[in-house]
Length: 112
Length: 110
Image (cartoon, rainbow over all chains, first blue to last red):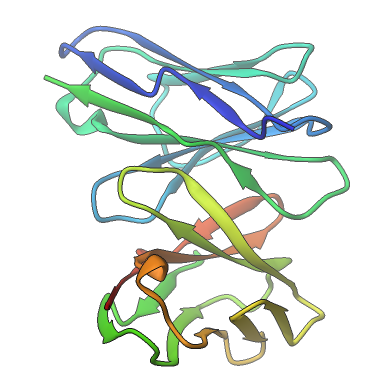
């Protein structure tokens, strides 16, 4: 079992650009959540996808959007990047009936 | 709004010590509580999951307890080793999302 995989591992973007991050959930997991972790902080919930729809959303602007595909993989898109968007972006997956969340290794985004 | 606090923010101990990490949360209406380990710049590794109806869970040298009514959880690490050095995060789950504390950074010296 490959676990939760995220790509790319590192990314450098310029202010104003757009970025897409990708996540493949653990086998058998159909729910994907995205979190943003700034340096020295705990992860903050961005949104969650289930059955290809956004089920819940945290306190993040509309510049943050996502998508879930029929194979349960997911993308996180961020438009009009700001310096403050620099962070580690974490993807977590859970099965429908499960309770334990499993995280990927994260994507380190640096906005310059 | 749920708030999660972890004390201490950092801890440095010599190898072999038993230690306790603390986590408190403001809203006791949680579904479960999960402890994670995070190595620098890496993702989160799940250590222990305690359902809201449970009082504790054990895995090897780790033991986590939960007192939902008082909004507290502790992670006990027995006979600490240098390889335990990492940041430990607790997270509470309500509905289907996790709310995290800022973590306790642990350094175990040989």
